[in-house]
Image (cartoon, rainbow, N blue to C red; front, side):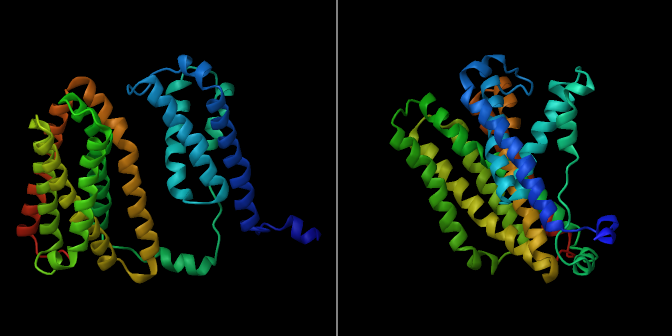
Length: 319
């Protein structure tokens, strides 16, 4: 017993991970719940630190603490759940409480450096850690993040754009957004036929081009029909790029680490959705909604051209 207590070996990494999740995940849930029940009294005191509006900032803070705290506590999608939490803690420590004494912000400081102990067979993990995916996989990670960062304009901003051009019925607004989803599904279903004739890079080029045209249609639209056409084109573009990304990652990743790399891909996927309102809302303060869609269309067109150039200039990419 004495030797076990004095031993430097871990008694139980499983137990340590469980306690970390329950204690610190529970603390985040507690703080988030406190903000929910005191929403009306605490919201007026919230500062617009990020420039996206105090109410949105407060809602995102509740999401990161309460919702993501629940995921951390139960161990569900932990790697994804800690991203909003880490961002909120970083803002609290470095911005919101930057001028406060360290004693006032030592709790967020402690949270920033928490980590979960490794669980599983160490030798197997060490062996897998030496296996690396090709560096181009990081291009795919960043690409999926950018795609969702821009595409997320559709469910968030299309309702406002439609109301601005006189479409008031919620059923029509929902139908327009649903068109992008429906045609995304159709495009994904047809991916095997598309990929049989085109390279990974060329599929991305076409997908981004369709997205660019779709966003341009939305930008110049004055009628519901043109907006729906933009939704269809955007859906077709995204629908072919999602399976294209998944297939390329699976193709170039060694089987032993595919789970790890797919996890990273999913992380960047949700990171793009998380960052979208944070990046887009400051832009909307400078530009009109129509202009924002046109700027997004320009960015998408540049990405499409970039992939096209990449396609014709290299023969080194694994297919």
